[in-house]
Length: 304
Ligand SMILES: [Zn+2]
Image (cartoon, rainbow, N blue to C red; front, side, top):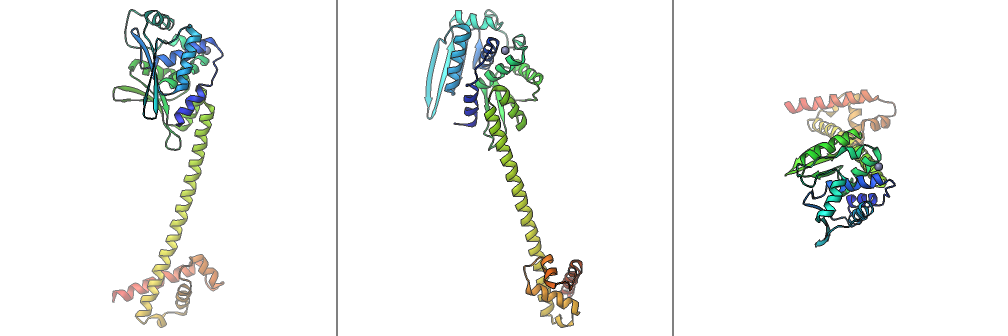
């Protein structure tokens, strides 16, 4: 199952204690469903647990069932579409949430139903179950909720801000997206929705990624140092070769010949290792200075 599916399955195991929260979760689920108006309530989901849950909650809250349940299957994905279209049931549900069956205006949030923090959390859970998704944290950090309704998206943004979240919003085709990119915010959101295990998985994925990045940085850093050493040794060896070919080696001072022999005998050693090899005969800066001089001499020879 996808990470999103697992998070939803976890949320579906939450048992709402208060009746107000049952109503709030149903509200979040339905207002973010495909259709929520005076003609029809239509909710499509690929999550069988959520389908089961919303049917149970509506039965518990309103004592009614959906008028139609349509199951479809495309490849590996099965989908259930739950529909309420009978006037009496629509009246019951829409009326409860304060919507007028006669009038159809743009969909707004009835914030009066969401005064309490427990109800807000239940509402947000319903909303995520109905139209949210979260990306596998092994790939990237992204959680989003989608709706076709502009005013609803704005009002839910305000609700989330009031709950201490800092969601972002954008448009995708004709839909309004509310989304989070920050891993801490996604963890908080999942926890509030009743999926602390998914939140923990996200945290673990983040820690693992951090460790991997740190190890990679270290490896890259070591590799860079190694290649620096190799490049420096290579330049020194080439310089010594040039000097030898031009017959200049015997003309060098004893100090420079010593440095050249040390390098030729230890072609891959770092400067530090060479200083150790020299056993006190030369300091690190002294040896570095001699190599610089050898390279300059070789350059002089090459100019002639
Ligand atoms: Zn409540």
